[in-house]
Image (cartoon, rainbow, N blue to C red; front, side):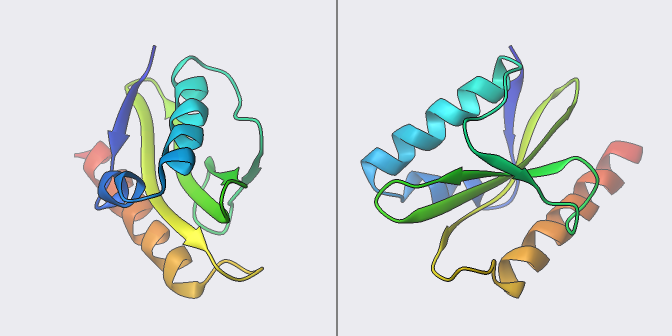
Amino acid sequence: MKQLLWIGTSYKVVGNWPKAVKQAAGYQLHLLQQGFEPDDWKPMKIIGSGVREVRLHTEGEYRVLYIAKFEEGVYVLHAFEKKTQKTSNADIQMAKDRFRELMRARKS
């Protein structure tokens, strides 16, 4: 089973979500750790190659952005509550920055 590797404040953000949302996120991340696909996801090519978004429809709309293509684990790049139909530029930029930093760290 792959390890979950949390980047930035993503762990703290998920920890502050309502209980039902945390449970839903935990289940979807557990599927990823075991090598399965989450129930509802989409690619987020705008952020980087291999980045995907888990879509949670529990007590509102929540998203977890991750990359699972590396052997060492599933990197959770960013997590947020989605308040509009379109993902905010701030959330996209946060995930892009964390993705770039992860790629830099993996090269060194």
